[in-house]
Image (cartoon, rainbow, N blue to C red; front, side):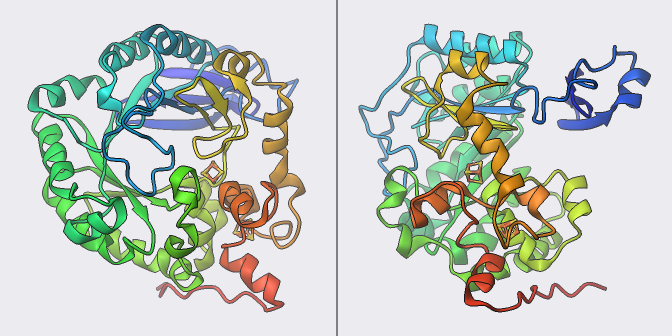
Length: 392
Ligand code: SF4
Ligand code: SF4
């Protein structure tokens, strides 16, 4: 168990079951820890990110048309020493989870040494991979990770439509190998017009193969994803259908954890869930520069992995966490967001939606998410009508 002091008390990190638990000052004392140094001098934000995405390479042979890092077969790749130094700096900052990704992360020759170093420094390393090149021996080596997610945007033709090549069987084989090796594993599913229909069939196959999780991500206008964004972005009608669909999915596969990424939270909120319930379930919206940060393959640190607004190097991220003006701006947005976010019951959870989408559609990071159903209704001058989800 690790405990990190915060304004509100502390975050306690458990490995089994894997969880980050927010506890108050009284519980910190009950656990036998000294009081939080931030109790009397609140920071107004987390004392460090809970998770940092560390891109170990921007090389990838697949060259998917929507790749958010615009990876290529000869993309940037940091050396082992740079990656180990990044791990040390993030460990020193107090980060809990290190999300290693690419490009195709398995291509980096030092990947497993970097992961082992993260473990030795008290971080939990997790991995995202396309599954290309994941042999049974590499699957065994993946036991160093807390969780491995394989990118799987549908089966057969759905995968082909999304990624531009026939990779679904490779991804499924990788998932099966990870399962056989006893590695906690699941899939990342990017939801777009190309993959909207294939979600249930994919979830069923993942559950059949023993995957523990399907993490659903909104397609974003980042990297090569910008060029075809208008065609592939979800429609307002689809955004409104998300919560009923996810509820049906969880009911069909009780053993499969259905997660949504930060950018889908405005769509979830279209069904008017209890805000306190979302908070209790650990659902969070835009946490760029607070719970989340990222370091790309060129060593540039950013508030999240889809944002190209750099804070500086990883050293500048670690040293400047409490005072960097770019981070301060990202953190402050939710409190100053204009209508309809200003009066929205979900503002504390959602934080105004995805800034990557907002910047792409409106040219500015800091404005209400233009694809949020509430924002769309507000702009049409209509009262927002929540989605009915058949509550008992
Ligand atoms: S900008 Fe915010 S909501 Fe969008 S991907 Fe980054 S952290 Fe998530
Ligand atoms: S109105 Fe703003 S805060 Fe509310 S759900 Fe939409 S984007 Fe989030």
